[in-house]
Length: 280
Image 1 (spheres, helix red, strand yellow):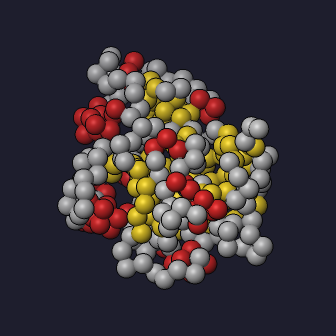
Image 2 (tube, helix red, strand yellow):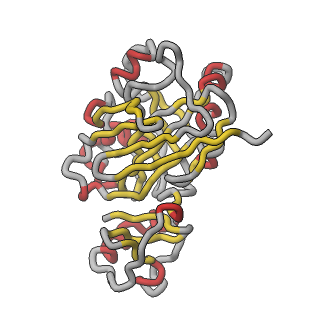
């Protein structure tokens, strides 16, 4: 199953287009894309037999973030060995966890304003929780996931090194968390633990890897995080990025106004961000 945020309304997605959930369910489920995660089990049961007669085309310009207002957004640093190596970091013994503040989230095809000349890319698989998870084991973790989506953990590297060792502010400027184009449930993926992901800048490949190369896979991340605090329905986990970031290149390469950043995840799709200059 795929679900999307279409002009702020929850939709089921098929090859033919989208079905407005509030209309198709006669109001049983509301139009708010975020609210559905609080009713995820009931929604999944209804969606299996949802009426398809109300299908309408989806314009990608109308797509918003699949989970636009999560209570919590977790992010994991140095979760691919090759990325840790390029950054000169040791392989972590536990997930290097920080947060992206939710106001950074934006649509999958939105323009992103560059606040400086040191903004970098980081393509990531993003997990959206469908159930409350607290002190769970890796074995049952995927059962608590609503689905996965494509994400970019855009980062201002200058702010990152001047924020007292904390990452969150550097990764939370408005627009620094594009996600989408929709959410795909784990059962739609042949192997949700092994998906190709990558990104391109103006068509040039800058990152390519597989999620099986994570140090801590999705089940382990959910278990480690939930050992400390509850993960709530609709929460996001940005699971880390592979090698290929701009800051470690020689010379360093950062995003510039007018460039186009495309990020993809196998079995999910592609998101595209056009970078624009900050207004003076």
